[in-house]
Image (cartoon, rainbow, N blue to C red; front, side):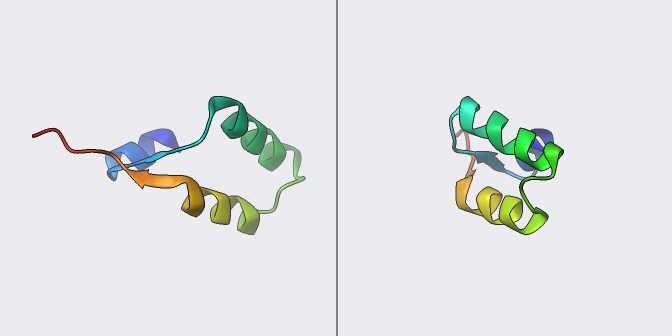
Length: 51
């Protein structure tokens, strides 16, 4: 997911511990696809462009 976001000019703005927790919740089935999608949308930020 990180590679996909970076290739499209975005990154996740969340601590590594939070990201790990979310991925584990998705993997275990305790977080729905819809909730995960909402989390990604909330945490997604544009990558600053180098001038």
